[in-house]
Length: 234
Image 1 (cartoon, one colour):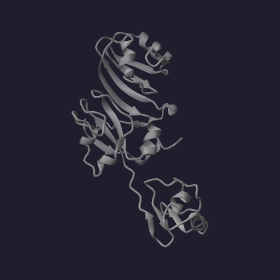
Image 2 (tube, helix red, strand yellow; image 1 turned 45 degrees about the horizontal axis):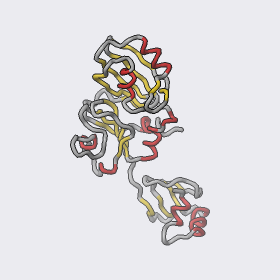
Image 3 (cartoon, one colour; image 1 turned 135 degrees about the horizontal axis):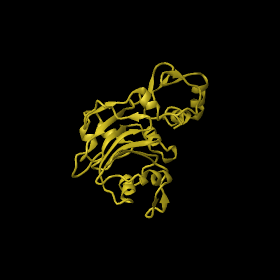
Image 4 (cartoon, one colour; image 1 turned 180 degrees about the vertical axis):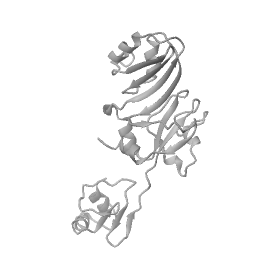
């Protein structure tokens, strides 16, 4: 919420008190004097008065990349399967959520955070962030797939045409596929158009964030500042 509303919602201040505090430079937001009542206060913001009194300590924002193994479900809880949160050795991990998902048997890059605004930027369809996958198929991949995927495929169930996708054939039954959206079982359905079954799917990147080659399946690490900022820009 806005900083002025945050202040006036406290029992000890009314709207006039909040305006006076801001105008006099009596409020610090994340360590800096802030006079702009329109500034945003989140759960991660530290809000203090000029005398050092803490009105909100703020939670630390946390951001991780996980090398998801196949057979682990992309959920925070599940009655039958091990979840990706089960792989994390972190305090208060029940506060974390997934920024995008992978199917049960799909492996690769998964982003996990407690920052809801950041995860919305990661998954917002209109941002059209590229997601790159390595695909293994049962039968050899037809070269015709390249042009058809680039044009877009019509999905009857949703009554839509997929966004143009980039396909690079690496071996007879292996390819690198770049998508700019995330439809239900999209990769399997695209190759299914050519009666070719996907038997292996592995995500290697989302936007500018690439899966760390040093992470074994089931391992994770904190994102760098540069990786976090790559999804912080509009």
